[in-house]
Image (cartoon, rainbow, N blue to C red; front, side):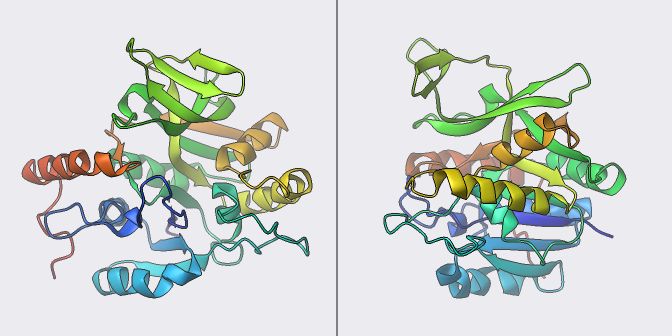
Length: 301
């Protein structure tokens, strides 16, 4: 059974100010997602599932269906605030989705095979997809998942703070802890710093971070369902609380349910968090095309 690629594209793009998931960066109008899907196809993935908000569906399908038709199977999952609330009311002030692990939970019934999860607006590189495919087809199981790990210093934006899941690993490169740091940046002294409620903290340049590239057995969706029920009981009234994939994976490891391997990649990440990041992304894509990593038109028939 070929693995599936799940693309997280339901975010509101609030910091970026537009629907950045479908902005063109490639020479023939390609989005960042196009390059990820192209890499997934050549690595051997058999299906792509887009997690989107229902109001974006018509626009989204009009862009992606013509170019992907006949190349890879496609499906769509709508993430809504009401999904999996089990009768509990959504707070009136709540506007943003419940988070990335809730997005994965919304795939229940649609994804029944080993799958990878990525962000729509991050470029991960060909090596990451090859390693993910190899893991999903040879090692993935109910008690063995993985994270494709990147070096923190290679994942920062010059234009503001970013969110990263900072990983701690043991001697076997199994995850022991992961913490979502929602405000990481390089300070004026050149040190990488994150901020939280207790203040500012320095973090190593070489720290391994999750860029939301995870590889799971389909049983992870049930892990998310159980954890989301607890999350809602505790945090439903907090308008900005989010149920992140790192939260669910951390519980999976620390409750003894299994192991999560951290597989380093040599791929160079880039992405768009702020509008000011866009020219750099365009330049990076151009260099990859010039180097022959991608054709000038990904989907030319």
